[in-house]
Image (cartoon, rainbow, N blue to C red; front, side, top):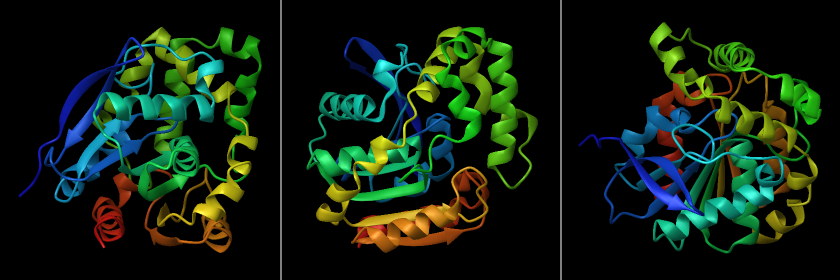
Length: 272
C-alpha cells in the first residue's frame, strides 16, 4: 500500500505551521526537519516511510508553506529546536523518531541531545561539528547584505543551489516547485535570517551530550555532496557512539537522487 502525502497545518506560538503528513496516524511518529530548503526535500520518500511511521515533515516558520517570519534571534539552532518541540506538543507527540537534513540535522541533534524525547535519530547530509556555515551562507551575517537581498536575488541563488544539490537534472516543473517559497519577501527575510544565525558552536557544543546519550543514529549521505562533505559523516560515526553511516548515490539532496535507497536505509534503522 502506498501512503498518500497530504499538507496539513498546526498553530504554534501564534503562527500557522505547515507540514507534509503521510502514514497511519496511530503509527509511531517520525518528525522530519528541513534546512536551507523546505519540507519538499522529504516528499520523494514520504510514501515509503509512511508504511511504518506517522510522518510529519515540518516547515519552519517563514519557510515552505508555513506562516510567520524568522528573525536572527529566533533562527538559531537552539531557538528552532524549541520551535520543533512546541510543534510536537501542538501535534500531541510526546516521544518521537527524528530526521534532519542540512541545518535541520543540526536542529535535530540539539533536540536529541537535550529533550529526552527522541527514540531514534536520522541525519541526512546534515550540518555537524564545524561544517557550517559554508561561505555562500556566511556572508549573510552582514546586515547590509541581508537588507540588500531581493526576491530575485534569492531566487537566482536558490535555483543554482538546488541544481547543485541534485546529481540528476531536475525538470523545469520540479525546479519551479522547489523555488516556490522564495517568491515571497517575508520568506526571503526568513532565509537570510537563518543564514545569518549560522554558527558552528551550536553543533560543536552538542558533541559531549551526543556522546553521552549514544542515541541510535543513522547517517544517510549522498556521497558526492559538495556542501556537506561525507568526511564529516565519517567523523561523526567515529566519535559518537550508537551511530552508523549508509552512503547512497547522489549529492546534497539524496532523496531526489536515490529515494528508494534513502527510504530503505531509514526504515531499516527506524523499524529494527
